[in-house]
Image (cartoon, rainbow, N blue to C red; front, top):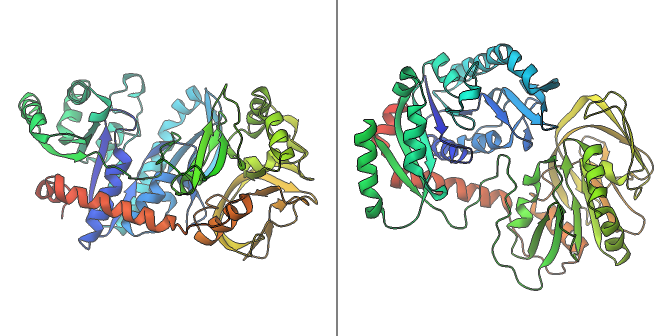
Length: 482
């Protein structure tokens, strides 16, 4: 039983990508492997097979390893609900909101949960591949660290350090990070991986030789910049898409400050007939066929921001001209008449007026709803699958069952004029039949079939291929205990 950790010189250096690639590469060799991230800060999450909540990246890594997602794969998840605080989720369950300084004092308790989960994974799998968070050289966060070297020291595991050359300054990132570590931490670094390189590798070779001579540590390989590659983002909104035809369906998503699970929109972004536009602060909502109100970690605050931006008036105008409107999770709650938060779960206790487009009210309750579900969409009776992650309970005649769930419940609603649709289901667009039905509802007549799950599998396999082609697999096998 072995543990290997991947840490990065910066956020978005490629830690999630490399762990995903290694999970699939190791699995191909018939070895039981599990992903693990001690502490994750992200608003993109997934519901696990054991009914908890973990970071979305770990769910994708579990897929790469051929496993169902489990709460032990991400024992501590922080979901920011303000600039100073976050909801703290331990072993898949929310235990409350904490300010940053309060959480700092809570870290010994969180570390106990981390070590407990890691030990359970080691009992069940031959290899645990660990993803760090941010950078191990954040001096202000070193005391009580549970996400990077603090964890590596506690379980005595080797570390690979990855850096993104596309950002620039890759040698400074690697050497600088190493210099800021303690001697024992430096000794844990068993090699470097350089990510997202494009160009002639011969021009990089002198730098690689210098790096190895300067640090005494090997470069395990250089991964290329992959074109047309997709892996669900851990946190940042991914706006990349290929050029689309002028006749493409125009879909707009307002980006609110606490937008959550925006990976919902990846199947739309990747669809050849959809032009997806994310609209940020200070931008007007352009003419479109479909506007989607996304999930939110702070629904009342994000609704207030939506009004400050004048987007509520733009949505009214959009509907007046015959456009379609879809609300997902927090977006669903915004469509109703009122949102009540008597316990102050997402900010100051109180109530807010909703957009009033559907006849229902939402009450935020302490117990979060966490479910993986299947059912049928009211549009064309298309099969749909997804997951629920929400604190609100919504009730009213406007929730007339946009989705009939296999467990006997109904979800969401459709307005009498057919223009406004609401649902609590994340992952709504991942089922090809549901995606096609929703695109036809929004105005696209001839819809190309796109299997998002197949696209994700293809790109996970592409990543594993890059490990085999570009990394020192002999050294990797030794580090993985293969």
